Length: 130
Image 1 (tube, one colour):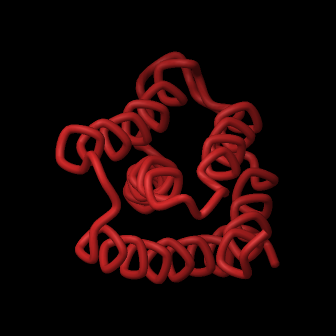
Image 2 (cartoon, rainbow, N blue to C red):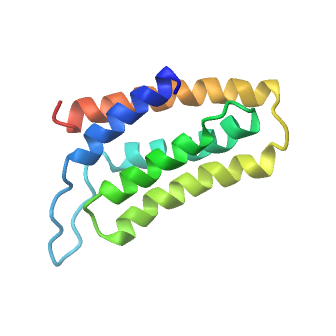
């Protein structure tokens, strides 16, 4: 497992362990980390596709991590579905664009790994209770 995937795993575990606010009968505002989690989910989808396309061998790890995060999320299914949708957008967008691993795909992977690690650590530090 690459160091970046390991860092994502630790940060996502911290976020998943933090319970979301209990929803009331009326719609409550999303948690303050919602936008970051949606972006992280989208990045993970893109990385799942691109890392497999470029034969890095860990695309399944990104799928496993997002599934774990979604399963651990105590919010209603509708809100969990938003995370899955963001992951699928990231995956599908690159599936339409890239058929082979290129230098641009490698550049995108490097940038997305950096952004994912930064986001995961920031969310965990702010909201993960660690």
